[in-house]
Image (cartoon, rainbow, N blue to C red; front, side):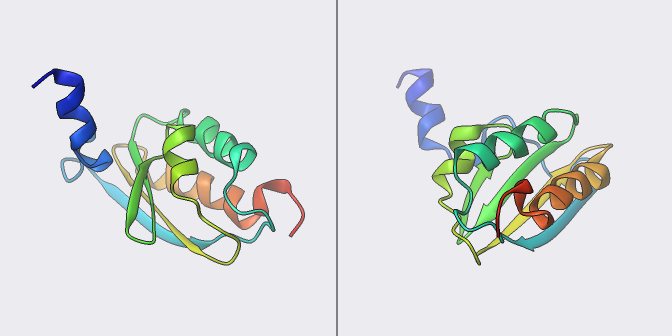
Amino acid sequence: MAFLEQCTRLPISHKKLHFGTMPSARRTYTIRNSLGLHARPASKLVRIAMQFESDILCISSGQTGNAKSVMALMMLAVECGASITIEADGADAQDAVAAMGTLIENAFDESV
């Protein structure tokens, strides 16, 4: 089986992410902006996530997406009022979850 096929068959949380080896942080937030987690808020989350060295996941409705990938976040299809859990693992995990949480709590600076 080709390497790419093997990677696409693995759950996103098992691709290049190494949870459980360093300090971690986890917190659940409610999406408050009226359009949910569409392209613009997803890209804002990714910009924040990319500032940190930690591995960061977003989890909603049993699905997991890499917080450093706009496509992975958009595929979660998180609607207004739904919960999203931010989970980070690494030396700056607490700061990463806090920064992303602030953006979510501020409704991505969009209308609520």
